[in-house]
Amino acid sequence: MVKQYPEEKMFPIMQRNALRLKTLINQLLDLSKLEAGQLVLDVQQGDLAQFFKEFSGFF
Image (cartoon, rainbow, N blue to C red):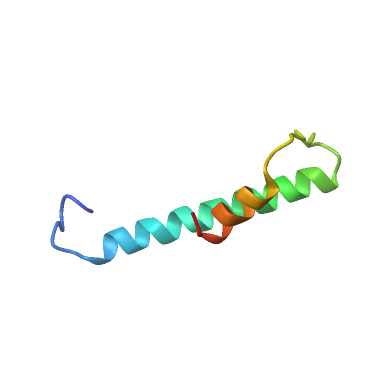
């Protein structure tokens, strides 16, 4: 459709929203696996302050 309607401005928004939805679905599936005991956590040491800065968008 992108090739058929190159002037359509909604496609980037649709693609971004589809990727966000995919991410949310994958997170829900991972949570379900974790609760069922089928997912093993990979615990690592790291800089928690830096993680939250990146997570919140403040670099």
